[in-house]
Length: 425
Ligand code: CMX
Image (tube, rainbow, N blue to C red):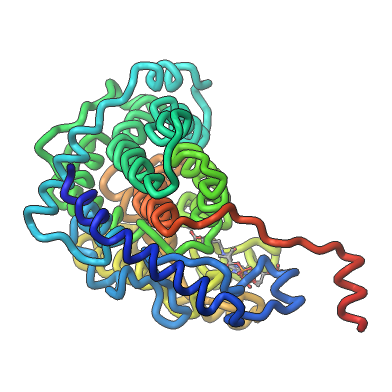
């Protein structure tokens, strides 16, 4: 048995007991009330989900199992996976054990490569990724065991098995999508002696500044890995998983949400915006020129990608991590200089406009500039990189949800008529 599975086996009974006690002893207590505004406004702020992997505070951002994300940026992504699942960082032996678990599960079945070959050449990489993740479900161990008759207590174990299989394969299929879709040459096979994040970086085929590139990719994988469970992708995966669909279906459904421009596609849109500005001015514009340009965009009713957030009301610490990286490592890169300039200009413009509740940069505002610098210039690919990282959090949430024995998700909807009658009482 892997050390991770052994650790979880020792924790799950207690977790299940805590959840059972909450239901039994406090089931009728009220923790949140729902206003009409919340019903009309995307359920914003309604406390109705349980998620232990991470928490997002509106005035401090992402905290993973009690540790602020800025304290985790130098960790390996697989260590953060362990942290999300167990609540503790692994020791060296545990970390190595998880690494070799993942390395032993990287082989991708042949039918997946046939599917990759069959896509029209200009398919969006996110279409490719979500289809290939669903297709990997052919090998779902959970589905197989469930069909044979699986006790509810064991659901989490096979969900963990599927999750580790899927997480191990994500960098392999994602890098293959990159190489195939953008004509980069043959697919690069994983190196069994590299850690998970570095392996992904390696398989993309970047050839220069490899140490820096590997470090950046590990950091990227850590900062995008989770954002509690109410966001579009995690929530979607949770809902699908609650029907006992396997993690392949669940993750691919979540990725379909991540592919939306208001969610994960924003990182593509951010760099697209930066490149448009550079192209328009033929250089990095002056502050005033940029202010006028950005204001015109807002006046046309368009959003400034990378700014604003449904929960946060401060600069996203994940943006801070990327900004600090850029300042230290690539301060003179044109795209990065644009990131810094936008940070000086856009919040004031959004405050002046008075619509956005959060005028500050989110995770997507800076990462594109970093990826571009190291040669990943195909912006349509960026959300795939986000997806590889987010698989860590989404799969962890699915495992813990099964460990807690959560039931199928089924909130109540009301009609517009009902709402009108209710408020006029
Ligand atoms: N530029 C211009 N207008 C913005 C804005 C921005 N960056 N952010 C919010 N607004 C506008 C909204 O469009 C909305 O306008 P309407 O009232 O005309 O519809 C108004 O301000 C109020 O929105 P909000 O309550 O502050 O924001 P929401 O919670 O509804 O939406 C988000 C949050 C992220 C979708 C929104 O800020 C946005 O569209 N940002 C740009 C896209 C982006 O960066 N998304 C990535 C988010 C991170 C992630 O999930 O990956």
